[in-house]
Image 1 (cartoon, one colour):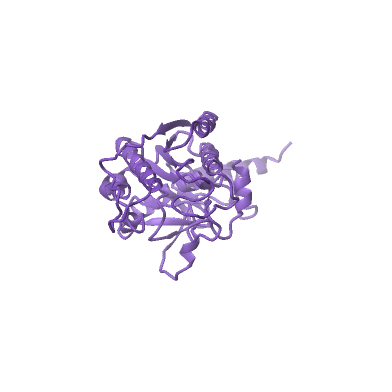
Image 2 (image 1 turned 135 degrees about the vertical axis):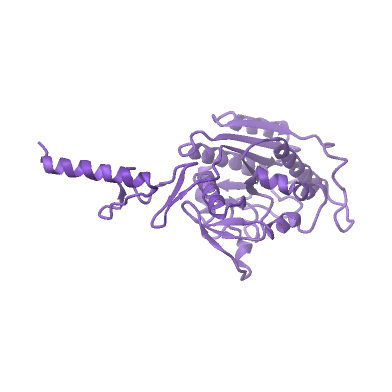
Length: 347
């Protein structure tokens, strides 16, 4: 039989912890690095979606910007005008692992599905919708994509683009008056389609994604918790990029460092057209975002970079996703990242 004094002490301790927590504090048992009321180790995810973000030893942030819905739009291109579909869009370069493009598309979708399913452990009531907008894929590849989308309980949709869609809106010459390729027209058509979808949807957050980004399992969870936390701290909506691009280390630029949920994030002024942001930001910069699909700028992301001069865009350190391009590309695979492990996990 337990000593009555010990039982009384245990009861008083638990009562004290509960009272303290009602005032917005968390109690850490320094002897074993445990949070008694949560019965969790301090290295575990301590945050609660939509309520509070907890970082040891910095404490608690009460969330003001709760996320209720997320729409992920994956722009798919698996079959173009080139004879060898192992090469990259508008480039005569092969991707890392040198496989047909459909392999990268399927692994991107698979990794996003896995990451979304993982996030549901923490964001139980979050409405997630994964949309694949496909341009020019053959039927065999479309069947593979459909099969993969049907394998999850997450809500999914496959949208096929027609070649004449947005023909009246997209310029066939770039900003310098030079004709652009059919593959680039396809890319721009798909960008414009994804923006149009977001324009009509009321989702809280949108994640615009190319089909060659292989995600870590924890990627979506980290991005969601970080968005809630930092948009609350900054009192502003923002942009998040999942990749730690090599080009970010080619110059010595000023940056700001933020502590996300479990990783660090830094402010950046350039990304590719893969990013997460809010419905509010899309409405605010709708014309600029559409412009990336209407006229070929150099770089293509020029309008996006102009937005980053006014708004925060953050990139994770270490990376949450691998951009599977050529190994020598400064816009490709992230440094200090287990590329092969993440690739195999998304098979």
